[in-house]
Length: 88
Image (spheres, rainbow, N blue to C red):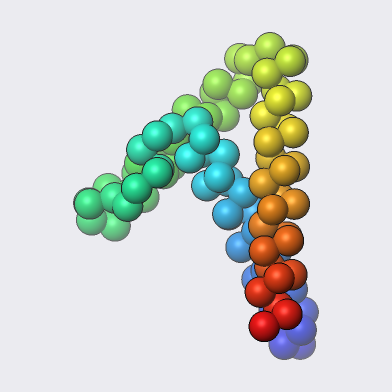
């Protein structure tokens, strides 16, 4: 049971880290800590996700392919760092 929970938690964490990696590359606002309360930060993150998804839907195929390559690279980087951390 604990192993299954840890696996799900790890998978979810990787997804979130990849998402923030994409948002950081697209929007400079995510490169430093927010100096707002939790509610405003939540609105900023949700708004950025909506804008990001709109941009993706209206982009050309070439740009979408590049974004997918970046996402895949982010996932590999996160997986490698998780595996490295597990060694310690």
